[in-house]
Every structure is written in C-alpha cells, then in structure tokens.
Image (cartoon, rainbow, N blue to C red; front, side, top):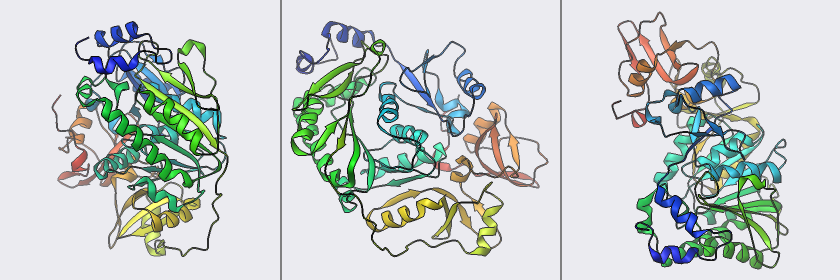
Length: 464
C-alpha cells in the first residue's frame, strides 16, 4: 500500500470488525463516494427533490439508508455550477456522518422544544442536519472555536435559511458559564482524521501516532470543559472521523470513568454493516463505519445520558436586546411573510429576526459568549426603507409579495458571478433573483441597469 504508511496500518490490526485486506483494497481502488442531504426547509415534496437531483445527474440515485434526507450520487458533479447548491437546496455531506440523524431520532423527542449545542460545528454539516430535525420552537447553538472556520459555519447556516440557530465563536470552556443549560450536546471532536484518508489522501502526511495522542488529550479537554453545560438527563453524542482506539473506545472508557453517565444503545440494521464496538465498565456501545463495509467514509459515534449534574436555573437577567422601533418595524413588515411570534432586534443599525421564544436565549448567551450570528439578518435600516440582507433572501421567511425574477441556468450563473444577468423585466426596484423556484439573492432593477447585490465574498470565481 503506497500511500497508507505501515505505522498507520499497524494500528488497524485487531480493531473491532476490521478486515485489513478489504480495508486496504478499498483504499487502493480510490473509489470516491459522493452524497448529499436535502434541505427540508426549502425542498418540500418528492417532486422538488427529484428536480434538484436531476439537475446534478441523469443517472439513478440511491438513498442513504440511515437518513430521511440523504442521497448517494453516482459520480461527483461540479456543485459550483449548480444554482440549487448556492440557494441552499442541499448540503454536500459524507454519508457515514449522516448517521447522527438516526441517533437523534432514537434518543430525543424531536417534537418538543430542545436546546442543542453543536460544540465543534464547522463547516456546518452536522448543524444543518440537526436543524432539519429540531422543532421550530427549539434552539440550536452552533459553535466553532477557530474564527475563520466560524465565518464559514455562519455562511453555511445562513444558506440553510433557518431562524432558530445561533452561531458562536468560543472555546468549549466558555460554555461552563451555563451550567445545566443544554438538553443535547453534540461533540464531533477534532481528530487525527484517518477516517477520511480515502477521500483526502493528502491528509495521510499529517497523521502520526504522536498526533493521535495529542488529539485524544484534546478530545478529553473539550469534553471536560463543556460537560457542565449539559443538564442532568441530557444527551451527549460524541463522534470522530478517526479509526484510532485512543480517540474512540478509550474516550468512551474515559467518559464512563470520569462522569456519571448511562450509555444509550442505538438500534442498527444488520444490512447497514455498521460495526458495533464496546468499551468501559458498562460495556458501552459505539459504532464504527469502515469504507469496505458501508458506502461512506470512516466514522465513529457513541451516545450517553448524563446522570448527575445541574439543571439550569434561570436567574433574573437584564434584557440586553434592543427591539426595533415601531416606525422601523413597518419597514421590515413588507419583506417578511408572517411577523407573528417573531422578535425584531436592532443591532448596530441592522435588523435581526428570530422566533420570539429565542429572545431570552440570545440575551443570555450574549452576556457570556461571542455571538457570530443570531437568527436571520433582515437588513440595514435606512431613512426610508430596509436595505435587505442576503441572509433574508436565503431564509424561508420572505414575503410572497416581493417581486421575483426567474433566471435561466446561464443567467443564474452570471448572477452568481456578480455579473449582469442580462435579463429583460418589467419589475422595478428590489427583486428576488430565482432559479427554478429557489431564491439566490437580491438585485435592484433601475431604469437603465440592474444592480447585482449578490455578496462579493460568495461569488463564483471559476468559469464553466
């Protein structure tokens, strides 16, 4: 095996369910598995799903068996030149990691309001998955400690279009200021990345036994630092994309030895070929995904219920949020289809919108954490109007009365390059630029030109 070093393959011998010869063959073959997850906020029925999928391939697609929204594509298309991608119709996600959906459906009542923390969330695959599952009254906090990755996370959350998400940019220890606050904590921990070697062969060069140990120590610190933020009887879901025992079974053992927990076993269909592993005094169950057994990359996941700890007590807190003035509320109302049960917050001349029940959450978190994004940014308040933000275009709350301009694929790609889409229209003023029913962003139609308001930092730079 040329690109998998012996010091790595030696660590695979004796792993639960490992068939080393088959594992090496699948890596040598270099097969690439491409999968995506449909956005149910925007793609509402089977016809719309098929329209999106047929824009990517003419060949048959298949379902990811543990996900209601996941699909395998027969080959990898150029997502960059697919307008549905830029409109947030789907998220390109590795299929094994979509197993989080199956876990959440088993361990949580998804019909009740939950406060969920995705602690290591960038670039956003698991956060967009979680948001798709949660009830509208739930709140998802998506955190990323690295600033540049937090920016990418915020962009992907914005594209997903949901208002009940807060993006934070904090170290895990900062969440200890919120004892017993969260119902569910997902820790997709930074790891040595061996599960992605087939997809990203260049990552092999960064692997070393020393790095595995460093990652294991970091994973323990992350869990220990944030542990108090999970309430008693709350759910902790731990995952990695590593095959190493030190980052998988040994972390399961460490959790059982250091905290009062109860492992939650997840039912797994035999036809999925997921390998069950056990560790620790409870013989707690975890689940290993091997690319020679499943149609996906390497992955590990386990789940525990916290049996002792705080239940958050709401203290009397000062209200830190500034509500939008009534005169400015009227400027916003024409852009939003249903203003009931929404909170409109003014922040540095901009209007943020989120569900009313989320306001105390935003107020509390603002006092303890750095908030990168909260809800949907509706736009900038000007003297006579609201100048709409791209987040509003990406959201599912835009009013049906807003003028829309339908674009062909070629026009859509010109628009997404921030060029003149070259259209003839009778529309005047602000308009949503649409591709086959999917909003892409704003433009302003003037008498002699169209101003393209697609964000410069998101524009397509490549040519077809």
